[in-house]
Image (cartoon, rainbow, N blue to C red):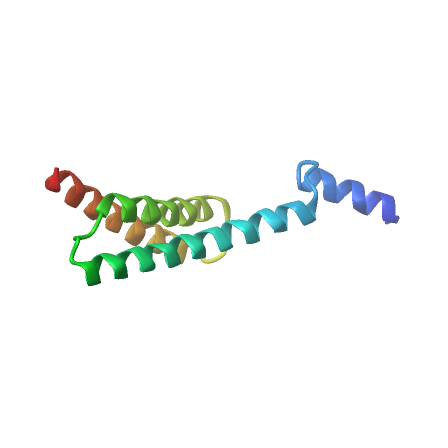
Length: 106
């Protein structure tokens, strides 16, 4: 196979998306998730030490991100699918609990 044929096959496989751009998006999503979790820890720690109570709505937004991320991965990637389903379920359950706590507090 020639270099041009390999490049063309790769473009078709990746639906004309640049492989580098896909990797950047993937890493960006990972870093965004880490940043969200770190910010949640900072807020949660502040809320504990000030005695102002917690905000379950904020945390439910963060947990739904992880639930959807693992759920989408479980649908699209066959490798370690059971683990992705498990993670999506746990994050989804936590999201549901936080949502119920939020609406109970209103």
